[in-house]
Length: 329
Image 1 (cartoon, rainbow, N blue to C red):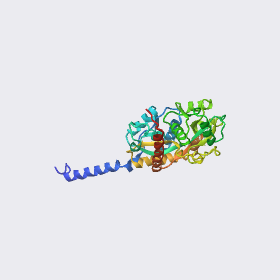
Image 2: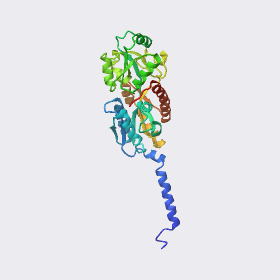
Image 3: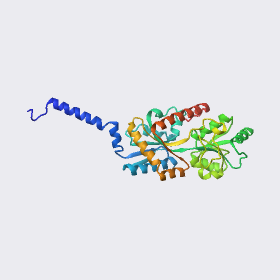
Image 4: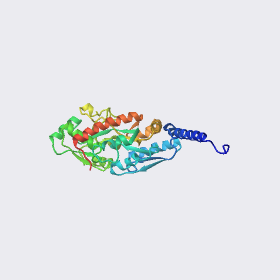
């Protein structure tokens, strides 16, 4: 009988060995070594055809080529991006469901207290794909040559000037509110449903000023006077246009960005593996050329650095939103 059936000691030893083997195979390190093991899903919380969608498809194609796993892009628009954001926040944390998000993800919490996720608890930042500076522009017929003269003009003509934005609660709305507060202006926000109609109305002369991102406005620069740019440095091609900071204004430093996020519980080794590969892709000459051709700055960076940047940007946006009492129903 003993020759036909293993002893209790042997069975326990085998069980212990199996448990140890399972633990090793399921460890974060092992998961990273086999990642990705299935189709990668890039969730874009905005409609197809925009910059977020284009960047997602570009990076997804490059990942598919290098890793040999299919990458599908799923557009999940609605509620200012929160529907798509929530899909990823609640997804299995194995690295195969990736959010392609934008700056709005950290701007919305102070304006929308009932979000179904917590940006800082439910997401693992991976890296920025691209960076998007904004410009403050006026029609070429405006009788000013710089921001100081524009501020004086608006103050001398109360109730006559406005600023166009991509919509309520967007970066351009926040920036316009900040300029109003710091310069003591009374400009009224004119919200549009996105960048395209904003640019069209600005070119058409229906607006007296606007905050527009470089990518959306690049093809129309000759139709505007650019009085200031956001960020910490002047832009290539606009070297004669000073930043807001150079002109005495503060809190205009944060750039807009397009970035990748994973669910928060994703193993750090998996997060780092995705980040490293995307950083390699962003350094490819054809990828760099395409991003810069969109009027954007190439992103990149490690997850820890991006996480710190998010916290810093959030603190700036939170204060502006609170001081300006910006809310979204």
